[in-house]
Image (cartoon, rainbow, N blue to C red; front, side, top):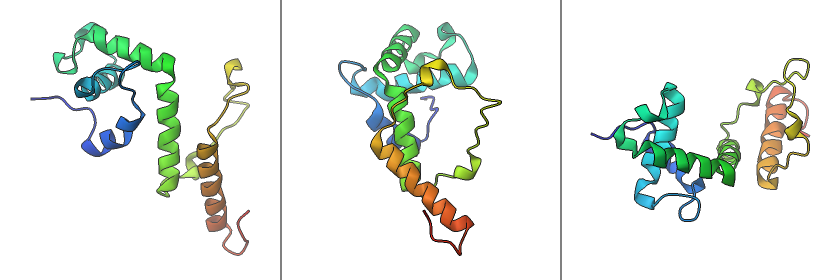
Length: 139
């Protein structure tokens, strides 16, 4: 029996962001390796304790390192945010940043956000503002 960390629906959203070829595994092992990464961080177990259903732990770890270095996780996060905004599922009321509590890392200076992601977030923010202030036009 294959161990699954993701539902088929979740995998359908994630799969397009994972590379195949130069920075990734063969297509038939892509899901198993990604779910192995999820298993590792969800359980906090050691790499060597990873169930064999995800493949050899060394291979899964190597894929994680390649994906990290290639910026796959950043692209995945931005893609999920844009998809949630497109579906109207982005709840910006849950977003709260207080600079007196959460300081940005010095590497955050000059962060570049994909224009498509930025546009989707701005559109959701306008819609949220319109819902909170029904008498005022959004903007």
